[in-house]
Length: 465
Ligand code: 5AD
Ligand code: SF4
Image (tube, rainbow, N blue to C red; front, side):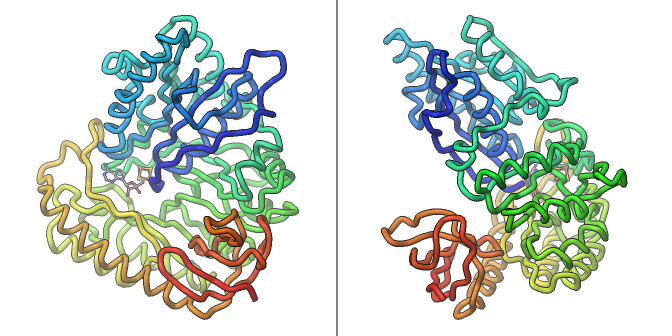
């Protein structure tokens, strides 16, 4: 999944349960969209336990860092962040206030008790499969216990995590994430996810529909289904048949109010006919697909254990484009995987030239302990990785600029998501995920309107039609 650092917005005082002492929590979220979703669910659990949110860690009785382990830099960041909390904890203690520091997410799952050994400041370590136990774990930590909850719970956390109040959902905006699948069985040789998020598990259809209906009833217009391998989702439909993600999307497309559907992140091997047909048939399924390929050389794809060739991927892209000609693709790339030669890297550039992605996330290979890649011979020197990353990004940026440049003068349908920075402006999003700034005359938050693109760059500008 893509990485973007985000801090969750604070929530209304209405979330505090009556009769309990008001306590405050501060959440900082690292990593992918699933962590954003998880932070919201943890916030819901804390709200049900009488906590309210604060944006200021100095005011927080509970400081929760929801962490990412995907690359080394992301994981190390946690320790430097914890270090910076030492002062806050000491100052609050001097004022007679207790501060509980909790580490959640993939670093918590991967390192467990080691985190407390390395950073004794931490009181609580909790892995993604046990978030429903967070309020209880916090209580134990506040009673003086060092708590480590990283087992894979036998019970389904989603059965135990409380739903947010409608007001809380509304305060999060008109777009929402909804996790439908977690974990990964693919074992790409560079990746820690199968170890941190465990085996592939799909949430049941009924649970997903109920959550989507609840979101829609609170005013959410766009839902993005999340999973580490979202298109590996499968379940038993209301009709008793086996459903894949395509059938699930068809069902969700019928929910009144839900105007836009998206899903991420997909593996090329799981793009089945039912899902491709959903792109052909469902106007609410946005014409945008994040379909990571990682590399363009068959030798490297094999070493990465991707289980497909470059040609397999290109043929798949062709089928998807035949079903939905206006679909835009985005991808993830790794440069400098062990053994990658100049020729291998050229094959990646070739593939990129053929696909022409509208957005992409590209990374230097980062060896992760416990994954097969870390032990492979022929690790690529950092300087070579730097050069390749730059060359790749230059090419990707050209394609991205061409795509948005071509939108100039065209009518585009946007979902208006929020107020703009300037008075009188609102910010919407195109079907292809670009932010679009337009005069508020175009419509209000939650409206889907057609505007004409007048200026392009990272952000698009538009005029009402
Ligand atoms: N090094 C560099 N990039 C990685 N990714 C996953 N593991 C690594 C690693 N060890 C990238 C992949 C994946 C994205 C979420 O992060 O491109 O698709
Ligand atoms: Fe990691 Fe590969 Fe699974 Fe994606 S498919 S989460 S890259 S192991």
